[in-house]
Image (tube, rainbow, N blue to C red; front, side):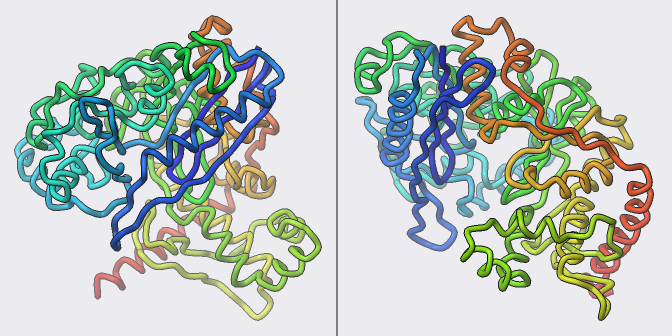
Length: 496
C-alpha cells in the first residue's frame, strides 16, 4: 500500500510516496521559475508548473514499489488560473508576492470603513495586497477583457487535480486566501467578486479540506502508470497538510516552521482566541481554527547571512571537505546562553518595532561562535513576542513542533524550548506537507478511519526538547532588555 502527496510550491513541485508508518518509498522534485517582467511583478506559467507537477508525480509513482491507493495535492495560496470555455489557460498566474493592486486594496478599505471588524470576522482577515480578489482586478487592468472570457477559475492545487480527473471544486482553506470567502457560512462573498468584475458562477464549489475531488482518469492513469479510479483529494492551502504531517491538529498545539521565513501556526478551539488575529481560518477538526501570532521574514536567512559573511572562511573550508557549515558550526557553539542581543529584522519585518538590525553588547573577547548563538537566541525572542502575547491571554500551549531546516539543529531547538518555556518536538519526516496530503488521501481511500488514526500511524517524533527552568529565567531577563532596545529604536526612527 502506498499514498502519494504532491506539494506544489512557488518555485517547484515535489511528490513523495509514503508506505505504512509514514515510511518514504520514493520521491521526486522539479523546479520552475517565477517570471518577473517588471520590478514588483511575480507571475507563474501554469503550463510549466503543471508539467513539473505531472513529471514528479510520474517519477514518484514509477519508483514506488507498492500499489498507490490515493493522491493528495496541496499548494501555496492566493494564486489562481483562469480558463476559457474549452478549458484552455488564458494567462499567467499572478503570485501572492506581486506588488500590484494596492489601489484596489485602498478602495476596499474605504468601502468597509464603517464595518471593519464585521468584515474581518466574516472573512477571517483584512484587505491585503496578496489576496486573490485584488489580483483579479490587476489581471483585468493588464489584460482588458480577460474576465469576460473567463468561464472557469481554479486555484493551484485544484487545477492540478482537475487535470488528473478532479471536479471543479476547491477547499475552504484555499478559498479563504481570496479574501472574499465567508469562513462562517463557508460560501463565496459574491458581491466582492462582482466588484472585482468576475462572474461568481465561474468559481469552484467550496468543500471541506481533505474531501474527495474525484478519481484518477483513465488517460492520467495510463500516463502515470497508476490504477484508474484511485481517489484524488485536496490538502488545500499547504499550511494545513504541513501541520497535519507534523502531528499538529489538536487545540493547544503549534507548528513552528523555521525555514527561509520563520512562522507559527497555532490551533485552537476557542473562537475568541482565533478571532483575535487577522488571518484566522477553520482547520481540519470541527470547531478548530488556525492562526499565526507572528513571524519574521529573516528566519533562516539570518543564519545564511552569518554563514556567507562572518563565517565565510569556515564555509569555504568545510565546503572543500564536503562538510555542511551549519552542522559543523553547531559543534563549536557555546552551550550556555549569551549576553548578546541581536535585532534580527534584517529584512525590515517582524513582530516588534524597529525596521533595522543590529548586534549589541560586543566586547573584545566576543567570539564568532557566541554571535552565531546570539542570532538564534534573538530570532527566538522575536518569535516569542507573538507567542507570549497569545499565551498571556489564552493560556499556555501543550507544545510546539518545529519543522524545516532550523529543526535539524539540536542547540537551536533547546534555545527555542528554553525561551518559549514549552516542550519543542521535532519529527522524522523531512516532508511533512507531502505526508499530510498523503494522510488525507489515506482517509478518503479507507486506509485510515480519521485524522487521529492517520497521525498515530505516520507521524514519528524524533526528539522532544524540554525547557530548562534556569535558562528560561535568564532568557526572560534578556528578553526584557531586547524589548527595551526595540522601543528605543522605535523612538530613534520616529525622530524622538
